[in-house]
Amino acid sequence: MPYETIKTDFDESTGVATVTLNRPDKLNSFTLKMHKELRAALDLFAASGTRALVLTGTGRSFCAGQDLGELEFTPGAMTDPGDLLEQHFNPLIRRLHALSFPVIAAVNGIAAGAGANLALACDMVLAARSASFIQSFVKIGLVPDSGGTWFLPQRVGMARALGLALTGEKLAAEQAENWGLIWKVIDDADLPDAAAMLAAQLAQQPAKAIAAIKHAMRKSVTQTLDQQLDRERDLQRELGISHDHIEGVRAFIEKRAPHFEGR
Image (cartoon, rainbow, N blue to C red; front, side):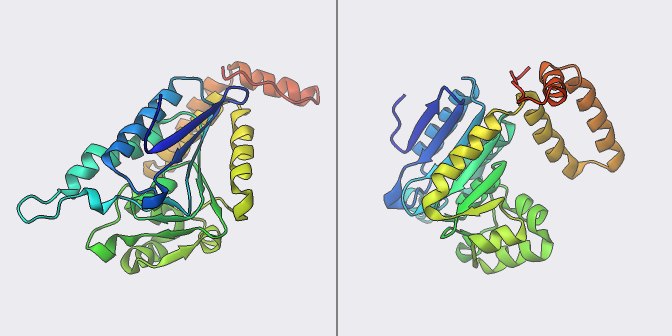
């Protein structure tokens, strides 16, 4: 279907989908239409046999968060930011987390505010060397949202999370990699190909195992060790009778590449 604020692509040969935020003149900042179109695209790909997804942006920005020009600041008629989160940003973050296939953020430039946390909501983050991450909320009197207060302490620890949130300072891509905030920094010109190659690689992995790994890792944040050990046992029991586990073992014994079918 045609979109106005995003571009989409699907490679049937690999099962890799690409969604590109496409408001470069506004640094790919979110509007209500972009929310609607992005969530529709995610729903479409989730139902179409997608094996991996790349999320990126057009131009010099990945995403600058909410387009403030679309909000109302007239006294007595101001946009309620809580409503904006409840109706749009929070469902988007939850939708990304609910996807069973791996999602890669290819951060091509500035990722600010909710745009930074949109990237962190993805399973893996590749960033162009010139990219940067900014928790800019404090500069307009707000708290990091779209999962920011959850993602940051988990990935970089409380001291660095508070530092980023309280100062709103720009974090360069290489520092973000050094701190463990993102997966890897890539030279700018190589970012699209690197993201496509990683997505194609992940798309060839056993889909049931990928989904189980995502589930187990995320549940671990709120589980005790005993609970997590039980979860691992249950997942291994389920995966141990899957076609892809048996195929993987046979391929290892026969010294050949496995052919996973997602079952």
